[in-house]
Amino acid sequence: MGVVDTNELYAIGDVARRTGLSVSAVRYYADAGVVMPVTTTPAGHRLYDVSAIARLELVRTLRELDASLDEIRRVLAGEATLRDLAATHLALLARQEARLRSRRAVLSTILRQDSTAEQVTLMHKLVGMTDEDRDRLIDEFWTEVSTGWEPPARMVEWWRRARPELPDHPTAAQLEAWIELAELARDPEFRQAVRRELYEACTTGAGPVMSSAPMLDYLEAATPIGEAAMAAAREGVPPDSPRGREVADRWIGWLTGIFATPESPGIPDTPEFRIETAEHMLAGAEWDRTPPDPAGPLDRYMALVTAVNDVPPEQFPYEWLAEALRASAQPAR
Image 1 (cartoon, rainbow, N blue to C red):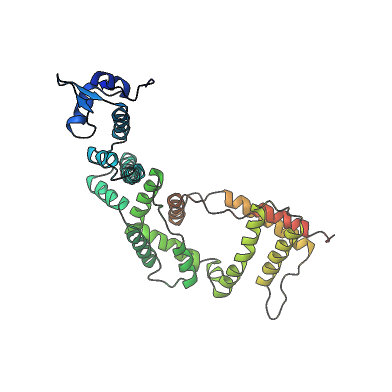
Image 2 (image 1 turned 135 degrees about the horizontal axis):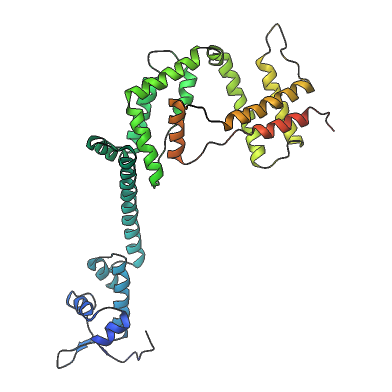
């Protein structure tokens, strides 16, 4: 829009050119009482001043943002601010985006699974579940998985902590993961498969020892040491630093304590034992990088929880701890 005389009045054709609106649109907004002409000529032609042109430009912008005529009237009348209008439409847009993401997730799942009409209905319900509904479904899942046998209560508590938590504005990928997870959690066969996997892990081979109360005590005691190792690795602490040695000493103290008994002090803390433990750490790192083949039902459950939460669990710093153990095997300087 060029320089204008603030006292000049403009015919509707000029107003249309300056605002980018059509003549019929300018006339429509006048007839709707949104922006009226300042006056009309004896021949009935509408005339607008600079203020009216500015208001029409604002009307055009707000209409492009999907504001209604009533909302625009309220803004122009001073009954509502542009901030109020923006907040209202931003909230509306967020709801529309959420619906679109839900539809995309359902449609993508339909294409991937070649779903039936009944499954589509179920998926639509799943994406609309409340936080309480999701929590209830996961609680029911773990209740059934742990029913009919006697897993240690602490282990059941640990399993229950791995919970899907959809954010307020999930991505389509998170919704797709939730749909699959919810379908599996509702599936009686999947529940039985997870129960069998956990039952066998706790009752066969080394399972009874690993799930015993003393061993669970030791595993809980290792948690703060593991957190200290992860924090040091995350912060880039050199493994051969005093802090690295402190973590290594705590780890070895915990490890030798596992094998100690009232009759025997257990494995002695020697440089050779620390180096051997470092080798075990490196083997653990390789094992951690190698996904199970085939993946069990519990692995699939955990993978989907990670996908829903979109926050991959922090990996244990096996290599960092191995270096810290090797450095600690040398005499302190």
